[in-house]
Length: 402
Image 1 (tube, rainbow, N blue to C red):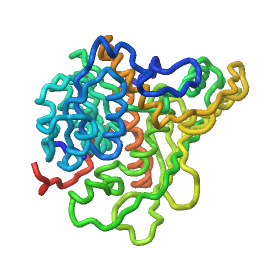
Image 2: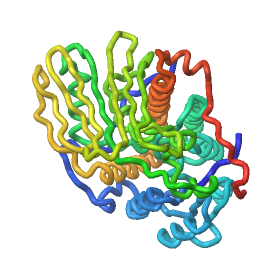
Image 3: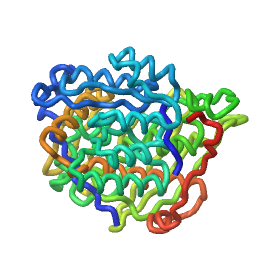
Image 4: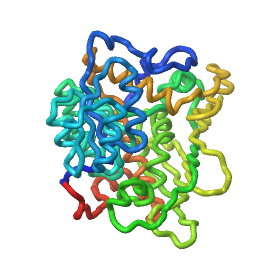
């Protein structure tokens, strides 16, 4: 895990060019594109579990050379370097390790880190002239989201690619469902329900920030953004994909259920969002040990038909003029990442720098954080008020090694 140093958006039409027209499970080596003609020197920032896992997809793609790694913890940087074939002199650690990676001559970076640090790392990479592949959530508060927005705009000016690794909108079945929704398949959209269910987050005692950063960062809101941001961001992204805009207000409630909580995260959020045309969207998420299956899905209700979009399970559009029987979403956790790795390379090679996923990810992060604050405050909160507050989630980083 690598740390950083101190310091009316337009909703995108999601471009899903990387997905096929039918449901196909692919192996990383099959998604090569123009790899042989243009190998990209890549640096990996963040060497926890997902970082090296994604690093394998970059390596197997064939269009990348993994030239450097960085993580706050030296042992993780070394382990990832060994796995990915990175020279020892190009394995960086400490709080400012990612800056040394950016100075090492890489052309692109993958930022797979604790969400709190995504904005500053992505900004630094763009300023250094690197293309950016980033994990989500891209930010956990308004200042971070605004920082990412500025970085995405700068990237476009510099003709740099900035792709955020959302898997759900790469799936061919989901793409077809949303296409039909946009073609009027639901009639007039009345309301949307979405759900995000995940296992409980463990919170054993920690003695200092370093211990927390190694494995327990989820349970501190100032690091993860909380359940509604860190986990729900996938399905929030899907809702905004359908609506093509973010909501204008939110009202809700949040609750802590576990006995004797050590950290400040909340296991339950129930939030109702409203859009500028009166469209209502209710989102509920939980992280409890109550035997429910993991789930990320939404149901969109129109006056002629109903649609379901899922991260795992069946997606379809039932009824109306655009009826679609749909199908199962296949192996999306890995298949979506493989598609995004291929799309990132293609964008670099072809000079595509519209950066729609990055700008969309700003809307997603603001929407998730708006829901968190409205529920925590137990009040109606408008997006305009929330952005104007520009409130940062504070965290004391003193004591970390440079």
